[in-house]
Image 1 (cartoon, rainbow, N blue to C red):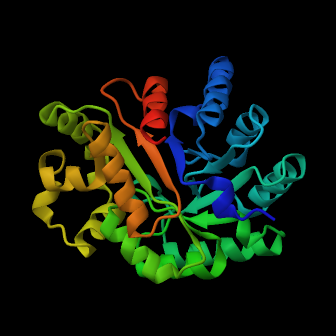
Image 2: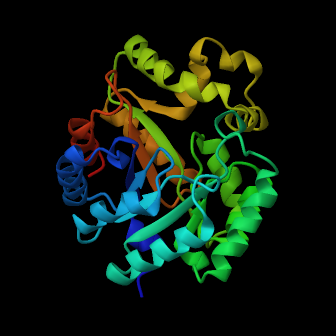
Length: 287
């Protein structure tokens, strides 16, 4: 039986645009997802707190690609409903869906209370509804959530991290659980322009304490969070530059212990525009 790590492969794509609700754009999203499969990516991670329903048409448009929620907020979707929808999708397309769960952020969620305890309760409810632990991963940053990913899930999908965090996460998880960090990519070799594009996108995350606290744990300081992020921070959480530099940055996560790196192409244009040329270039440089 093929393991989850083997099914996902080394590289996936993270996209908020492919999660969109607009039914008029479904054909384009399905075609883009099918192309990702043809390009050789093993998984698509849907951003923007997607539910299982957002994965269904994209699973149906492909034959091998794993579609994952990256990450579904536990405050937004009930555990029993999630388990039922995931079971239905699994029955129709075995092994093609992976449930990614996270606690989101206090500034984004009025109900945000006791995030760790609430995640444990959510996992208990999933277990009671029959959802298998090996078909879910957690968006774990800190030590407690990483241990929970090891003990109650197939592993972890950390967002907005560095190779240094990846090495720490691997140590916390041990050898067997999946470790699939997200990495943002700017396909631009001009340093000023690439960092400007990166800062414009990163700035919104620097107002979320879960991320900034994690950066502080791994050696950054408050000064790294001003003006959209210091060069040091930008260069740590982004891969930018020519093909060799970007490939080297991706490889650094694998060397640090990642099993699968999920790549988010960031461009200087509206976020709902799918970066399909960028995905093609990534596929070429990863060959």
